[in-house]
Amino acid sequence: MAKIDKSREIPKFLLDKQYLFGSVVFILTFSFLFMAIYTPFSFTAWFSLTNMRLFLLTVCFYVGALLIMSASKRLMYGVQDRVRFTFAKYVSWLLAEVVAVSLFYTLFTSVFIAPFEQPSWVILLKAVWCVLMIMAIPYTIQTLYAAYRAKTEELQMLQYEMSLGGEQAAVSYPSLINLYDYNGTLKLTINADSLYYMESQDNYVKIFYSNHGKLLSYMLRCRTKAIEENLAETSMVRCHRSYMVNVMKINNIRKKGKARYVVLDNSEIKPIPVSKSYFKNLIGKIERFNAAGRGVAEQVEPEAGTPVAAAEQAE
Image (cartoon, rainbow, N blue to C red; front, side, top):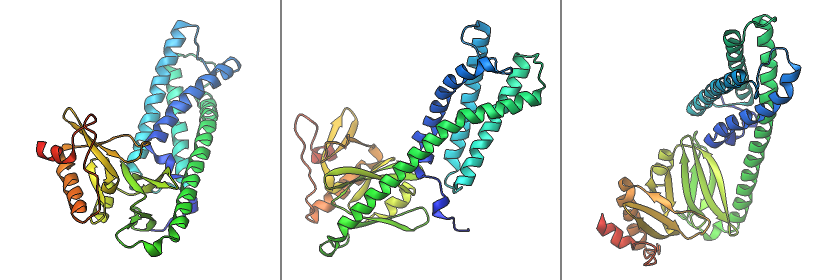
């Protein structure tokens, strides 16, 4: 496979599930404002909030457009592990969305709003221009913000690694945890004392760590299974299908009904769920680190939950 220039890849946040489906909501919301201004000056736009029939047709069209865009985002999200999205591919995908929505508008108009004096090809061309204008501003804002988030994250990680550089002489393996991306390239090295947990987002793993007392995050393009295998001999352990935690950062394990949650020693981090299938694995890792003198906390406040040892017996 040919190597792709990293400078041409889109910001990784643009492929995050929250960004992908958030963009659909953003575009549809923006389109309401755009069409309110544009419709009075157009011969092919028929949207209305006052005429009941046209209002119902407007709602139907928006539902159809929502389904088209949602399907596009779902497909984009699903293929990102096989397709490396450069800006050219990303823009091409968005233009295909524009054409798809425009074709749907033209067909919808021809069936439900006809007759129009303009032929269908004129309606299609105007629809393409209109949809392009509607999508251009939200996508531009989203791309700029995603690029800002990605650069901020990389800068924070660079600052962290620079601060870690002065400590590495005193830190020995396995206190330093190496993290590799989807291609097996070493992306960052984190001191185990700084690492809290990781959250799986399908093709990405979001890594949460601290630097100078501030909780930061970094998105790494890699599957959780690969991370789990690479970190088998470290203090990281999988406690849930979507989470891995650093056992050295565990404050207690709480039990609420049949559910269990890991509470880390950082008040900014919400309790992390522990699934039944991973509970014994978690306890085993804690015991191994305690036996090695790592000092993993086992006790909890009586009113907050059950001790880890009691939880293990309950299993």
